[in-house]
Image 1 (cartoon, rainbow, N blue to C red):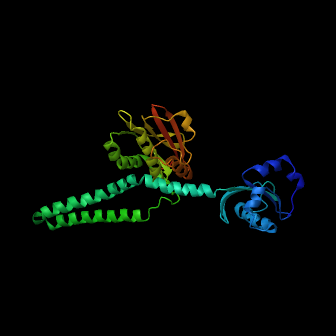
Image 2: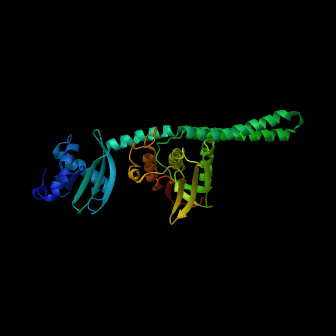
Image 3: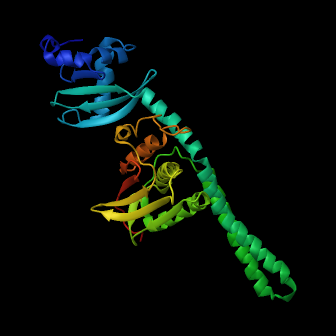
Length: 342
């Protein structure tokens, strides 16, 4: 393996030796690694030095395509030994490439734990939604069969048949709901689609309204017709559950507590703004909001916003928070503009 001594002795090399990212440079013409810092050597410790070019060069070729194409860059995750490495490759010439390796093993493990804990935090709302979705067809079946039983002797055969058909329709609806729950997985990759946001907001309100109103929290909604966003509705629902939970907690000592949901368009985005008139967030805490396990709640986990940001990022969405102590907090979620379904 050849090293360029001039590069190794430069200020650049001194800098690369101290950063917490593995850095290597490979030369396709010489088929060698011409530079690597100490962290990249540690990450590749189980591989003989003579095989480094073959190992790293294979990732660059498969990621960048044609080896003769310069200035291409790519990012991918690779599994190496017990590491999960984020690899970023940049072709600086037609004959060489830089490889940057970042150990993301602990971060991914932490995010997985956070997702599991976060779902448990929201399990009450999830079951509330299940109760709502299943309760409607069951109530319809109960009412239909009660009317049928009460009037059985006075109904024509066609009328009886219509009641039976209506009952069967609700049974099929229940079957579809149970099937969707069977295949439901919060850890699936997001599957964005065009979503009618007014219908989505109305459904979300029906999910949380009863629980919030029981605690004296009013919900106000301001929506705009015909706004569509390109999102995964399951992921967005999870985010809104997290955000509304935070708003609810901030209202515990507020007189006349109110949560306001506003839906609007801003340039090429559809935005949901959730505002509360709660205790607000001090400036000193604003920079810590998206840090794992940071929380000011007595029983909080500090994971809700971390997971929300991750979910939104995978859907090309954004989240911003504005707050004033003793006046309340606003959370703005920006989503890609969608198109009405044909």
